[in-house]
Image (cartoon, rainbow, N blue to C red; front, side, top):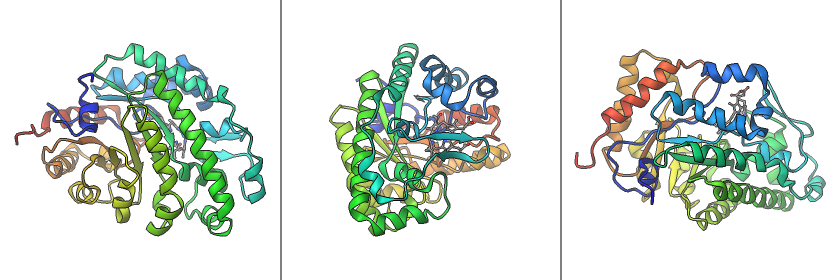
Length: 344
Ligand code: CP3
């Protein structure tokens, strides 16, 4: 195996410093990203491998991060199902025709892979440009979070339509999740073949569910994606938010790494997930705070990790657009500098 801090941590092997990367490390807080966005839409960036590769590498040129994440969006695979997705500034993503009628599930077309290929191409370009010790992460939405966008038609607070669909039309729900699972596996397989060293599944809205419902109606599908990707020989990170109350069930996905948000203390989260690596979990808002407060928050997380192998430092969710790049530079330096050595 290449001697990558990030990949070693995924396998809970000791590292010289705690590896660090940040969700949404490419994006609006970077002036060079905003400059590109003046000329191209988000979808343009995702559909042109050279542009996506460029955006992926932007944060790596600024900060000594231990991993890059390919620039794309979790909703891209929906385009492969012929579903219209637009990104409206300020409103987030909007789905052309939300899926509310159970009959439409059986009418979803076979995925058109041409929508997925540019992401794989971007991975090829980035992998060639990155030094071997810097890992390249591929990603996809987990089936539940993808289904929630499809059914709600966009972002949601209550996930009422999604839960209602799940509870009323269980057969169609199973069929829908099966199709999204198959699509996700195909998409991630393309990414791994193109050179992704690890894969993160974003189950960002899993916390909308009670543990029993997650276990019953969601977990088996995420498990299936995890197993398929592991069979290709790369580690999987499952990230979710609002799941502090059932992290043990999230760990049952079988992923090597469990990504946690900031709503739980890292050592307690680690106890709940057991023999897994852990990724997290600084509240992104600390990057807007004075450095003395940021210092304390970072120190607290590193102390709770206690130098145990298998901690990947990250935020508990994505970098906020209001963040100063200088603060990100400071954070990355801090994590590397203050990492406990394994002997500590
Ligand atoms: O650097 C990276 O992290 C890679 C790029 C990335 C994007 N989206 C690009 C993007 C990743 C990993 C995602 C994942 C994603 N997309 C998730 C899961 C992670 C999470 O945040 O929970 C979700 C739920 C989405 C769906 C989505 N896409 C939303 C809710 C939004 C709007 C929110 C916002 O920040 O405006 C998007 C748009 C989007 N995807 C942006 C970026 C950089 C901002 C849009 C822009 O440039 O105009």
